Length: 98
View 1: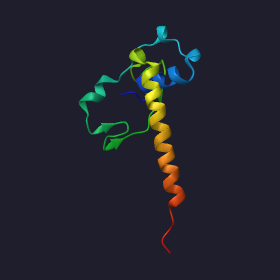
View 2 (view 1 turned 30 degrees about the vertical axis):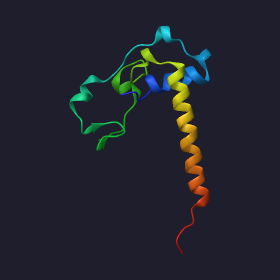
View 3 (view 1 turned 180 degrees about the vertical axis):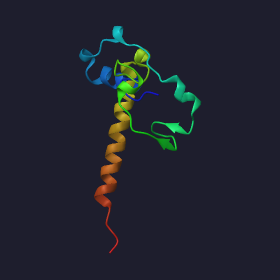
View 4 (view 1 turned 45 degrees about the horizontal axis):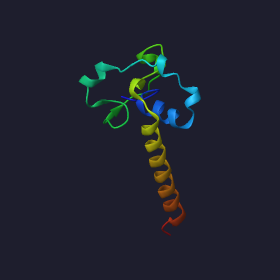
């Protein structure tokens, strides 16, 4: 449930811009009630819905940033670069059928 401001995003920022992160202010904000609805939720579930971060609390976080770390952020960053490079390579080779 690391949708916004959770473990992944916070870890990525700890890698890229640690000066912008204050982990002492980090609080877990996971919408636990969604764990009871495995078919309804965010990305990766068959049924998704539009949402605002205020729908799940007033802090703007949906996830658990409390264990975020720069090493995980570096791994996410490298994986994103790899995926982007592979996607661009595929785009460069793509030719539409005529």
